[in-house]
Amino acid sequence: SGNQDTIYNSHISNNLQGGVFIAQSSDSIQIEKSRIGTSPDGNSDGGTQQFGIVAQSPSWILDNVISGNDSVGIRLDSGNHVYGNLIGLNSTGNAAVANSVYGIWIDGASNNDIGKPGSRNVISGNGEAGIYLSFSDSNYIRNNYIGTDSASTTAIANGNSTIGAITLNNSNFNIIGDSGAGNIISGNNAIGIYLSANSRENRVENNIVGALRDSISNP
Image (cartoon, rainbow, N blue to C red; front, side, top):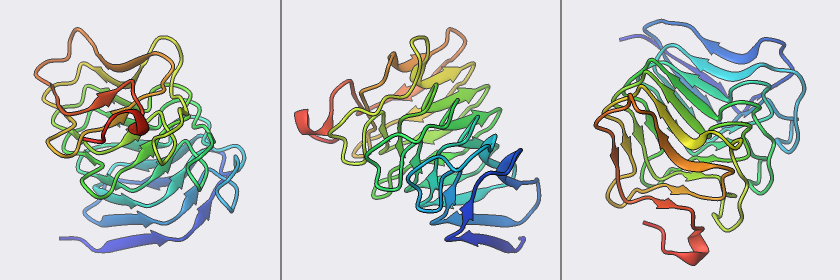
């Protein structure tokens, strides 16, 4: 096995191309408690930066604020763990600091774990989809708030009028929600969950779509 590199409690913004690029390697990378794309306090846009994180090697992306990027907050290849992040929001999770395109883009990849019981992401305020999967199979999206504030009491919408908050394009065998770990997908500008005609055998279970936490119990 490889070594582990760690980026911890860092402010990474205003880089023209992007914030963190993790190239293909055997090393494990952990990015934790950092502000990527924002001002130092995490409460406003930090300047011109195309993407927040591109992970081409398996990475642990934990408890960060990843917002204010001019394209995508996080772009993932296979085998990543993404837990406890605010993506498209400020550091308190109550106002948008948008990533201009997607919050998370899973691109031709598998075995990514986005949220888990006890450690959700809040993915809101992004310009297009909160989570976009293209040609990606066997990923897990569980226990997230998508389109709300961090308390799931106020809408902070993802998306334009033509795209889902979670969009699957030519993507199969993915799991969205689970027993005891459903997502709240609410307050978005268009469709809650969009599955393209070429997406097959995905499982959508135990989610709340279109209601906030204070109007229906959290799964």
